[in-house]
Length: 313
Length: 273
Image (tube, rainbow over all chains, first blue to last red; front, side):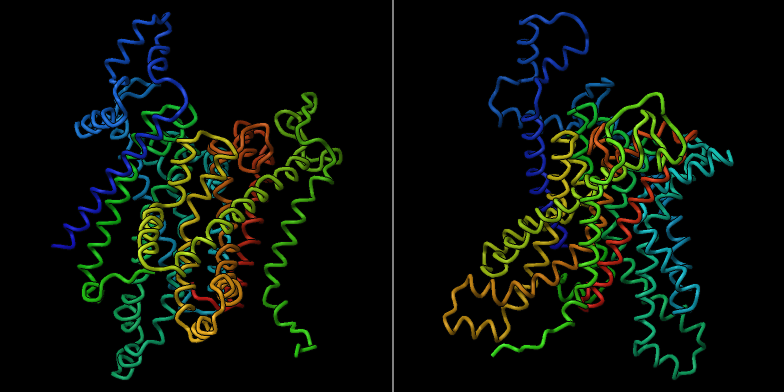
């Protein structure tokens, strides 16, 4: 319990630091936000209008006062309005987020369906053709640019065969191509990992012990080796959960899939600062929370870490 | 006395790196052999199929694709190499210092690095190019910031492990100055590990450059960059698929070469990741 409290305190400190940094960065960004806000209306702007809006946005106050107001608004879930769509940034993020989560989950499913059998077969039939094939898959898979793989799949299934929609969101069919692309791209690393983890477990003492007790090979494999091999896989998986979210960015842009990845890229290209700032805070909070959650899970699941403390690289 | 016989095992060990280096140099001088100007627009000859006149065909503005691929290689691979060089120049000394000095400096510095490492590198790169704006210079900066942490960590842990060994202790006792200990005894150990990581990373960095350029945050048209070329050609890929297939194959092969070299180097130097 003390551990969780400590992590939470760290989290709070980190958040304050991060929010201040992102606040200052956006402040330093070129362009006057007041003019930017008024310009969109395409009406001639008077000096008084600028001044009154400045007063309203408290831009004449010193920086730390501005930060305080900004922080206060942040805790009321008010991240400002997008320059482009005029909608509140918080609503925009929240409405796009489920689509990204959905895509992440389906890609994960694809990844597990590819890498679990392939990694297992590869380890069981070491140096046979299936092992070579799956290692080739892993090598090529980790070298292929995901957006290019997506383009090829799009060309094949959407243009040539005309089976699936290539763009947008809506039905489950829209999810197939993006999640297939992301799933294949990710599974390359896990095939390798599962294979080496399994091969390592084959030589452990507990396998010998089980064998000497006359337990069948099948049972040994599924109940002993496989279970133990999953520990490092899950560890790496936990660490890469954040990068999974980042992997969706390119795929969302490629398939015009309306998640937060597409949102941020559009915002960056159009210099939509409130959205960028909102995204920075949102995504970093998300990742820090994931990290803390995984850390706590480890401590709960693995008594070794609980006793010795997390071993730092 | 110096041993006269040359130790060939050193060359065998570093062969993958030599290969990779040869590839990078080939890519760097290749644009000199381009048959056309990669930026020359010729609207009368647009979207043509591969032919004798244009080895790989032309794009939507009639630019020769083969010349653009060659020029793009220099941009993509060159940028990747530049990023790695900057990371090594920044990361190795900082990691060594942190490991060598230790104490409070090391503790606080590592907290900062941990904070960087907690975030996926792609997210850091996107967020930074979001704040700095799209463009190649900002992209280099963003990837350096996203990647340097792991190098500092690696160098530091190598130094920490070596620092405790007897031969370093002997050097300290014999009164060898700190900079000499670092240069003569610690640097060789560090560089082996770092080069393996760097070779393995080159492919990832090139993929990152291409991906970020593809979504419009890196190289801007008309710069011939492989990812940006794919982005430019996207509207035409129904009619002229070669515009999309060829740059992708070049990216893939480059990354494949660097991944293979990294794997081989790791096996030869026998370094556990």
